[in-house]
Amino acid sequence: MTLRAAVEPGSGAIVLSAADVSRTIDRMAHQIIENLDPAAAVLMGIPTRGVPLAKRLAARIEVFCGKLMPVGSLDITLYRDDLKLRGVRPLGETVEPEGGITAKTVVLVDDVLFSGRSTRAALDALSELGRPSAVQLAVLVDRGHRQLPIRADYVGKNVPTSSGQSVRVRLAELDGEDCVSVVEA
Amino acid sequence: MKHLLSAADLSRDEALGILDTAARMHAIQTREVKKLPPLRGRTVVNLFFEDSTRTRSSFEIAGKWLSADVINVSAKGSSVSKGESLRDTALTVAAMGVDALVVRHNASGAVQRIAQWVDCAVVNAGDGTHEHPTQALLDAYTLRGRLGPIEGRHVVIVGDITHSRVARSNVLLLNTLGARVTLVAPPTLMPSGVASWPCTTSWDLDEALCGKAHGDVDAVMMLRVQHERMDGGYFASAHEYAATYGLSPRRLDYLGEGVPVLHPGPMNRGLEISSAAADGAHSVVLDQVQAGVAVRMAVLYTLLAGGEEVAV
Image (cartoon, rainbow over all chains, first blue to last red; front, top):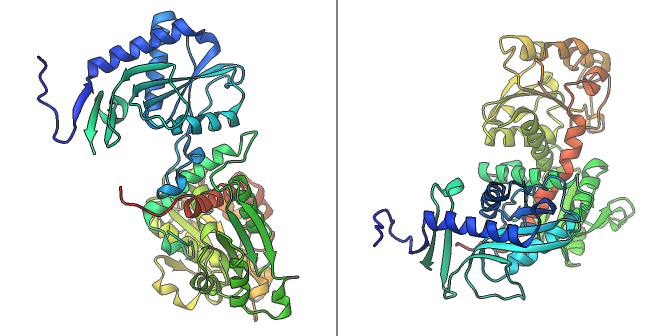
């Protein structure tokens, strides 16, 4: 039995604890190494939480195979198809990884895969930066409800949800702790 | 935020939001492909009743890089020269289904009037001697790039304050952002209502730059002497103005290292600014021009890209 003394009200059902999150990232790092050559690939985190995830994956990949995968960030705000559906959104930072992305395998990294629309926007944004040889997708949580023909190559955890729920990912770099929970809307 | 008519319309958070967005837009300018999609299908009309090169062209580039369709309408050669009224001209252009009007007019308040008549977003690109908010934003952006956060900084604005929409917008915006402003001008070029502005004033440039405030000046902004708006004698001679209010090489030496010198352009070299100041290490005049596109992209994005604000 696990103690969940520190769960604040409204934080919902925890699906990944801090220990689960680091185990999951380790497993995804191993899968990436098995699947591609880290020397010819880059990680592109999608702000906000995809960026620290990409950095953690790169750090674990370096530990496991000794190869450094360059990390970048890719802001997709200007490429979203729902800009008109909300008030104006602030822009995130786009940083090209060292050596660029052309002729590399780009692994997009995001926290949650839901409708697939963010990923579509990311593919558009990526094409402005160069021409990768291939693009893959790594997500910490796949919660289903796809609206576009998109799937992830590396999934930390599949979490069945209803469309009324939301998945909340908290990462130590931004939120002070690692935790993934499902919250009732 | 529907329009940008005055620098005073911006809250501190809105202003900082535009400056942050401009920084992102600026990073994009170094890319090979500069076109971004967020305003695809939107139409922006530059409606200029007064001559302009840098403001009009930077709004045009800003709109185009955000994928908006941009049309330039200048008063010369339009039906304005056939006697059409301001209201009719504005309504005619707006009726073509435009999403934003970027307006410059030589009468103070004209842009605010247009905003009351039309349904689309209106951006003030300079109205008479009143306001020029995007210039104030790009000046703030340039200052932030050189000095870091603007809060607590001291900016000295020198020259033809009376005829300057740049000065008024800068005083308002810099005040919103937490900076202190000192205006320096001869009594004839200091506007009559200046006592109500959130700033201090001085008639003595040497005192302002190296008197008791010496070492306390973080930036100096020189304003153009606007001959075209002057209807009488505001100073004895160009030589006398240059000697008392020009940023001469001698006054340049007062400034600490790294104190930026701004000028909204076009410059009257040898009058309000010496070539040593305009081209020297202190000058950020070209940074201002470059910031102009990024800031105007941020303004158009902020006004046009989002939908109705919905409480989340």
